[in-house]
Amino acid sequence: DAGVTQSPTHLIKTRGQQVTLRCSPKSGHDTVSWYQQALGQGPQFIFQYYEEEERQRGNFPDRFSGHQFPNYSSELNVNALLLGDSALYLCASSPDRAGELFFGEGSRLTVL
Amino acid sequence: KNEVEQSPQNLTAQEGEFITINCSYSGGISALHWLQQHPGGGIVSLFMLSSGKKKHGRLIATINIQEKHSSLHITASHPRDSAVYICAVKTSGSRLTFGEGTQLTVNP
Image (cartoon, rainbow over all chains, first blue to last red; front, side, top):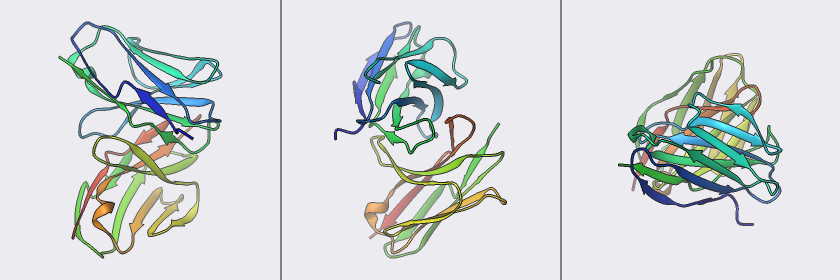
């Protein structure tokens, strides 16, 4: 079992660009959540996907959007990147909306 | 809105010491998670609690729902326990609210 996998692991973008991050959930998991973790801080909830729909959303602007595919994998898209978007982006999957979470290693985004 | 506070923010211990990390939260929750994060970012779920106490190896987690408080204990600490320990609470739906984390360093 590969667990939760995220790609890319590291990437550098410039202000104004767009980025897409990808997440494959643990086998058998149908719920995917995304979190943003700025340096030295705890993660912040971005949104959660279940049955290919966004079910809950944290306090993030519309520049942050996502998608879940029929195979339960998910993408996080961020448009019009700002310096403040530099962070570790974590994906977590669970077997249902209330189940234990399994995290990926994260994608570290640097915006210059 | 749920707030999660952890203490201490930083903790240094000698190998073999008993360690306690505390977590307090406001509001109602459906579950509380203790997570471990190593340098580089990967997060591992240690415990998910909704009541009482759980034990896994040298790790023990307790929760008091009435007092809105949880503790993570590490017995016979070891340098490989050095990591950031994060408390997170699950509210309606399955949204998690995280604490800022406790940086633990265990010296040999």
